[in-house]
Amino acid sequence: MKTMFFVFLGICFVCYLIRTVFNVLSYKNSPLAENKIIVNSIFIVMGILWFSWFQMCFLDPIKMNIPGWIRYIGLLLFLIGVFIFIISHIKLKGFEEKGELIKGGIYSKIRNPMYLGFIIWIIGFPIFMQSLITLASSSIWILHIIFWKILEEKELEKKYSEYREYKKRTWF
Image (cartoon, rainbow, N blue to C red):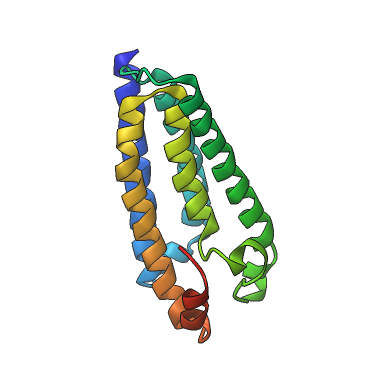
């Protein structure tokens, strides 16, 4: 069981690195980042990443002994993170094809709600599962997500003239 945890931790780490490399390639306007096979592969990598991460939560060899009410706060954080992700994804539908900056709905308050949702859920679920190493590893994943956010925002500033003003009115 301990071995499988570390296998999934390694898979998560490799998947985060692959996604980060893809984001850098995209930021540098590499033709590789626009290759349909590579883009579709990134979706598969993200699926593997999240599957591995959930396995880490269940297989974590060091369990925290925390009160039930704190565990349920973790569960609530997880559910809020998933909700934010889903709402932001629904709002995103259709706008990517139009090439418009999304400023309505959840995007009127939060610039990167999907990334924020990820961060909240990778903190909340390990608390609920009492998974100490998985919770500690969240700091690594959060750094990757913040790096993705920074690259994406630089790209959006180039693409949309109103993005700097939009950044002043919104959080994260």
